[in-house]
Amino acid sequence: MITKVAGERQGIQSIEVGFRLLDVLAKNNRPMMLRDIAKGAGMAAAKAHRYLVSFMRIGIVEQDAGTGRYDLGAYALELGLSGLGRLDPVRLAGPILDNLCEDIHETVALAVWGTHGATIVRIVDAGSPITITLRPGTVLSLTRSATGRAFAAFCRSPFLKKMIDKELREQADSSKTAITTCRRQLETTLTEIRERGLSRASGSLTPGINGFSAPVYDHSGRMVAAITSLGTIGEFDVEWESDTAKRMLAAAAELSHRLGYGSIQE
Image (cartoon, rainbow, N blue to C red; front, side, top):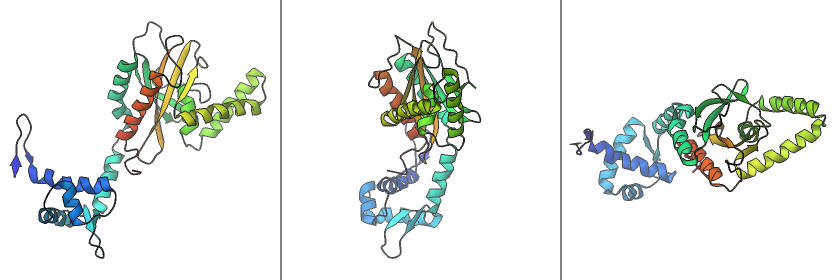
């Protein structure tokens, strides 16, 4: 049956109805009896059975021969993995960064892990009278910037530790401080960041500039990006419980969700 709603393109109603069954299976995350699937989709068991038979023929649903329970099939997994592979954090971040900039009235940016470390790839400028010298391609310190600290705390990379050690040695040499002291101070900072789920920096990299940075995760739970906000000291509230901090966490959670984070674990 073909249906058409005013102002919408034509569609095939039976496909939309059938996918209600798949939605029930996906949300329950376990094999289910026919009666429970039908009840969850709001249809008669006999009708649900016909749909499930068709879904089994194409491999999107499978049935356990012993228990009679239905579950999502191999083809459903293949479709899901294909969709996840198409997710691009840089592309998906666009509207989220725009909305965040409008909400907090501060410059925001997206960073990813590049060849040389934490690298800015996208910026939304709030139009502040004070220019923040941040451009796409900028590589940020792992130990002194909010963005770098987010990667240092949450990212898993074989080169991360080497890069951090190099920065710490340079800091120790320039400040005439023992490297063990620098390392201990950084670990204290990273421990707090992991507890908060958010990193911050106050004038440590750029004088007069505060920053927050929140990690973004993909469907596998791997950190793939960081959302960062920057503003001038005195105007930018860098307190952990500030409204800006909460909005940063919400924006990062939204992008993580768009990238499939939590969908498999739930």
